Image (cartoon, rainbow, N blue to C red; front, side, top):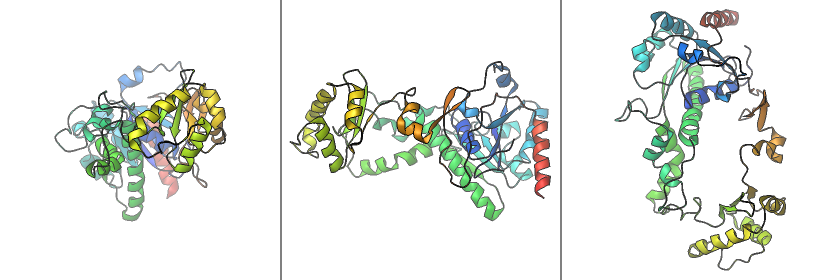
Length: 372
């Protein structure tokens, strides 16, 4: 399989996992990496191959079957890792070691390998061997506490976007890219400890700072969490929503002009934020989402309709940039970021376990010989 993009030629072995590992490996595939996913016999048997492969987490990859509980399967995977540049380990700490494919073994055989370990809690610490999911990592890092309109209500769960995908998969892709750049200088691989708690903490960093300096108050009273009337979502008459983010004074003035409201008391009078929120809510409730969208069209007020996932691809801007593309009838995000000289590509998804390890090894060996 010929791949194109800034990371073309980089070989990645992804041990099949959930969420952040597959997403990070899919980003690497988008950037041109030759990604081979290793699934278990049980995982392969559970796939309905009579239906088209549509999972975006499997796009642009190859997929092979190996039983890592069988010495023969371990040997096959080791032969693949001998030729790889990167391996993605999605297991809890110590699992790869018990299987005989830990970094001590694998990196001794292939010193240029970037051994990438993606977990929720990281490779060390009191929670390292504990189970966890996105919500747990958000809770412990303080991120979950930030979401919601009031301290009297439970925090709002931001799906699994922050830990699994942003703080996990994206951090994995960034770490691998950086390690490959360093390897180009040193000629050596290394072990990466990609922990979702670390990634989420990085995302929350500015809010740690704000809380420590007393500039972040109770949930739902701050500028960015719905406390400010000019940074909030409002219900329309047809039970849809409009997003208002008119922070700067010129945008705020444009907002009030379209809404035909005055500025008394002014924007930054925090005591008036609750009553202004009620006033804007009553105003937005007088027209439909489409009507408000038309009224704000061409106006720099930072006001946009809240689209659902079925509507978003057809948005005029999203469509003009092909931000969401169609692959075999399934909407998928286009490759991001976009490279001017070495663009990546969104490959088609594959069914897990549809290729043979021996075939991939032969292909990689032939390519290695051709480079010499």
